[in-house]
Image (cartoon, rainbow, N blue to C red; front, side):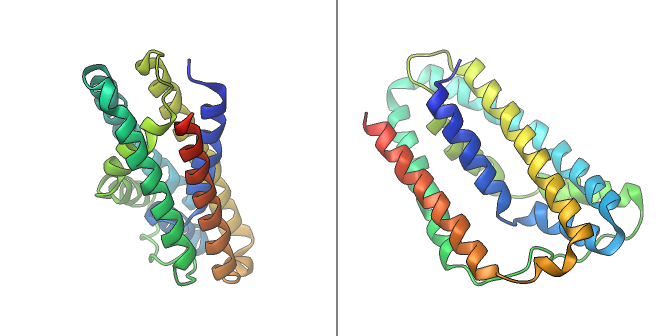
Length: 205
């Protein structure tokens, strides 16, 4: 199993990442605002369906990589730390925007599900992000496969919980989503920077 401290850091970092509106959240919120919570959750079912093969590919690829090039994975972890810090700085400096930037899909259950699936599946940054993010939380000296399996399952669970909250929030508290965009960006950016610095300290030990 993974190191408990690293696992807790992974859960916290993943939660912060899921709170930052990206393409998946934008579409979930757009459909919730337009048609109600049910359709936001249906969109979530589509985005989550795309995550399963992406996470599976990540786990298989990282397991093979860690097995063959374990001595080099320290450098990969540092690349991940830098990437996390870069995400935090970019989020801190981002212009305030609402999470419902995408237009909703037509009010058809099948099309809403499929659009959620395609938006998540065709995001070109997803696999790169997973490849840079996950190795930071794999404890050296322990079998990689079960650790990556746990991390992937946890990532999917956190995504389902947080994105469900986005859908419900958008459907029921629409007026609150438009304000405090800059404050939200700086809070989430600062937490990402803090997570990156914390991981940098952990990797030096």
